[in-house]
Image (cartoon, rainbow, N blue to C red; front, side, top):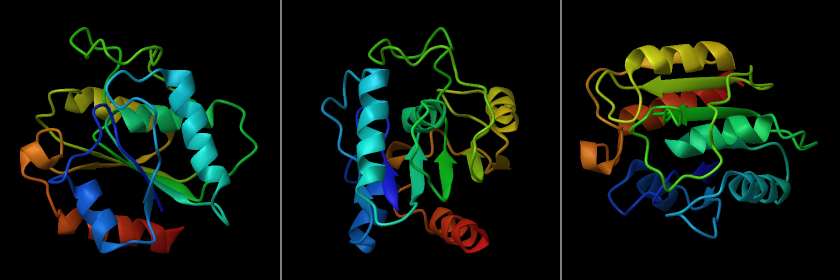
Length: 175
């Protein structure tokens, strides 16, 4: 598994960080600048993380990293992934999206060439439920709405998030 954190990284109370601690064989893709990401650079860093794996990994992405996964899929990389577990994809086309993220627009809306699941909340500050549903449909992803869960991060109370981990493991078993 490769953990792909979004804008500003995933802090100590975030499910991604807690899952990494629980599963030391999982690793987080490194980025040069978590606070001022540049799309092409992040895509290249994801490609480098995938290249280091022995076989096609499962990508576990949150927020802006979901967009990065879709941009990577469209990049023409010859590398393969087994699938992608995409949680709370941010709508980079939304007028209120943070300006720190450079080059991620327009929102990629092409079908992903691997199995994927999009998990979304009905009250996410970075994407409306309708838009999340449209993004999942465009990506060819299975869509799961988990109710009022904010941005599905530590600040929203999703620390250990055992339900999410169970959904990830079930997704992996189906690959």
